[in-house]
Length: 390
Image (cartoon, rainbow, N blue to C red):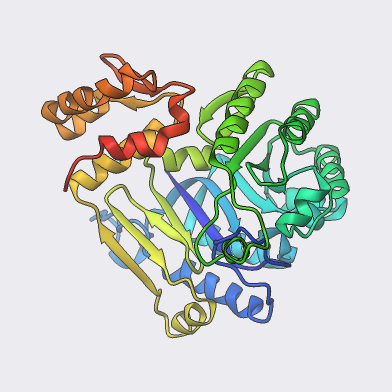
């Protein structure tokens, strides 16, 4: 089974730290929905199953079973319910949804209303990912978020009242205006409201973003890496005490509330990507669409999906597995590495991990390599050090 990611590149306003592909103009929204429908229709499905007893012209293509569907962006909650219904119809023509499919919609607090929640639920959406980022008004203003702290709190109550039992909240830590005390308030609010899933990200200053320019012009303070590390350590302690499962570096969940879709990424599962800048992966081949709305639309008017792709070498597949698996609580399976890449590679990984184990950053057993709490602070660096040369 596979997953589907659909990129909706529209936002009400630009957060100063964001480097995702988006626009604040809705001028091309209707044309982009039409282009999305065309891309879904043009995407090749599984090959035809031939039954010699039935004329080939009467046979149908096997439809692939989809276990997760994720509307990301941008801000998908900005779409009309009719737009979402059109996308659902197109997807169901091409694919089969599994009986227990997880369908996630990213939403901002200012888009969430009791009326919209009812419509989303009726359409089949059964999980929300809410971009709250903070419950502190000063920090929301600093980030240039479109919602207020009051809306952050209100939307959680409305989501629960609408009957959503599966939803996630995003928080950002490590900004120059976020004190440890305010960070504790943010996390305490999550715990008190018994939110089933939380994704927490360190504020990253991406090149060419508004935040990057403002820091360079001394209009905003730079990020303090030590402060971020401290707030991450505090986060892990608080969430552990509250009974949340730290199942991936940035993600915490109550029992059975992990994100199935994002877990598919970390497990290397196949997924389709539709929309400008969307990525797709089949285990060996990575594909990504052009990150330009106008060119994406114009290409699909000509029945052309505007994408680039690369075929991963065996070494690239190995390095990708190292990077993604080390982020999870299950860790890197040495059994899988030996089965897929050979005993020599497995032995090399064990050897390379010894210095990190000696420093208390990971634990290496016969079956797996798992990061310690301190090691999670250095996850990317450790993974990079364990990579194999092409």
